[in-house]
Length: 347
Ligand code: PHE
Image (cartoon, rainbow, N blue to C red; front, side, top):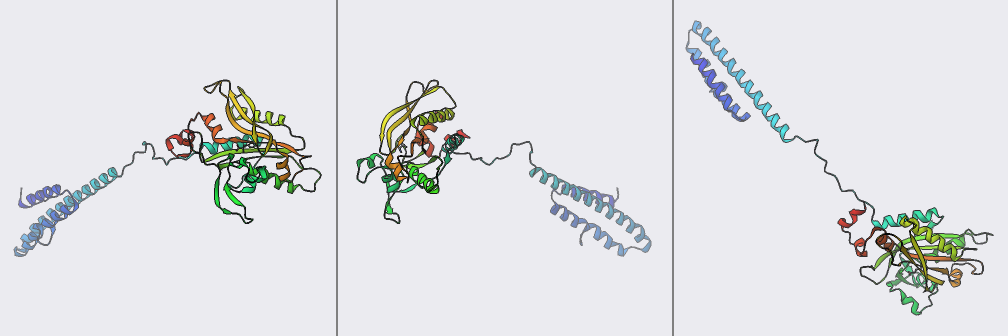
């Protein structure tokens, strides 16, 4: 092995030791750089005779080419390794399940409201919305609660420390009943002077407020008001309609309805509506779900209608109560705590 073969071998070994491109460039400088071993050999040619120069020069150039070839091979190997490790680091396993964004769902009370709206909608009822901040007049006076009458404290009302433009005190409506008069007045006005007024048939689901808080009462709760007023609407219609509703709502005919005499200033006669399931875990207990009654003649008058001609009934049902019974929830507060462990069960 001559000195050039040794030099080439040394270069190949050096290049093989280089683990990174920078190491390789340093190794290259030792052979091909300005003061590199091959460069020095080429410089040494100057001292030789022309004859010697020819053969020695060709040999050195041959060695230089082999060193350059070794360098390029190693360069390529390092680049390939670099690419491979990069690909490995950035690899993604397409068989892994994706990271999903949580999907929201409707609140059980909203679902219950929509269910109630669908059922009454199918029975020809309009669905209306009313203000949650009400005037004294709509919450009480129009509903036949005289000023300073103890009936006003039947509901523990949240008052708002503010009056409306006409100087009437405002409150957070303690029931959805104010909408009876609001809706009926608008309806009566729309058909004023016409020979025939279509029946008023509406439900009003929404938020209501009372100073009350325990497992079955929340300061904010939900009611659905129902109103049907026409020239020939009777208590019999209330009974059959409410039975249809309850059976559709609970998806069963295995239940009984009971009208228990009660008192509301805005209905006469008045009744609480109780239901009893004839199957399932709640069997054998009467459960109160609604207040109801025939609309009081004074309320009909406040609607802008003639009580000699118009008659009807109203009811006000607890939506949260209905939802609790339907879903088997025993603490009302669960609905309003925003705990996803509870809410996600209704997806
Ligand atoms: N508004 C009554 C309540 O909150 C319920 C009711 C509505 C009663 C309509 C009769 C008629 O308890």
